[in-house]
Image (cartoon, rainbow, N blue to C red; front, side, top):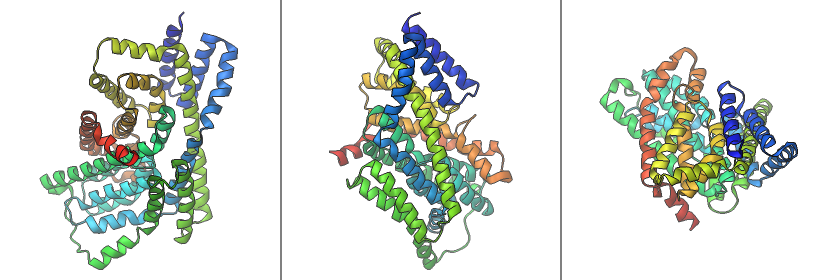
Length: 436
């Protein structure tokens, strides 16, 4: 059996293991080790198992992941983000679907701290959905808005997905953050436009809020946002101003969130313990998957299957556009079955060489990839954000209603992806402007 045949067999085994719900990190490590053993013997397999995880984990940029996670979990458990939705609600309640629009803005602000769509959906689901239902909003619109708005969390910096992609693709994390910021803002505007149009066409979806808000209430609510604004401005100003690197930004953000929580008198021992525990658990899970993906990259590189696949596809004379459409279809299907980190790290060893040899920008592709993966967070049957929303709201509505609610947001997301593919400069203009 040739190396290519061996690689094909073990990739089939990998998908089988994932299909029967073996944890993706364990599947990646087991298949990569087994493949290296089958091709090169026991010594090479054990050597790779010792060297590859160390080389990956020793990356300095990787240390920003637990730091950013700690920053987000501290902000969440000490309720630093509560004022965001309150302020957005007060300022935007007069617009058509104002509470839903406030949820989108609140999610964007929360995303700027956590970088996690799941955490964003959980937090805003607890705060925003009951408030909208109490104001006679359609449960479909209320839950769909918050589930979809949570996906902004992986686009607006800091983004864990972009940090991992930058390490693997050897692209600047800061440049990825800038590209993601553009697409995140673009998504926010598109979601707001969708809500306004739907409510204009069907006012029953979101009855107007009758209570008149005074100017004093508006400015009082604005004052409640200072904890999150201080963290966001402190981290972003230093990061994009060149004062510190993304790695240093994570550490500074974590310390700043602790300082602000203490200043806000919401930092308790139980909150700190919960934040640290969740940071450790999440980091460990991410690292196991990432190490497995690094081993898979080594296995596929030595087998030559990545280069062979790229050469085979390019030999058909397929245009970069056609190749990208195929990649989009693959990720939309994977997003229905796998969580984003697993889907990304599972496929990058094969997809990256193909994208690179097709002449496409790896920076642009990284941002588009994150957008595609986040669409998977709200599409059936998995739709992790949908299940999170259902979990935090209990019996307020059904799972089917939440999936119906996200449908129009998925349509908008697909339009955004089409725009990004047709006009790559939408992603690249800000990184070029700041970097150049």
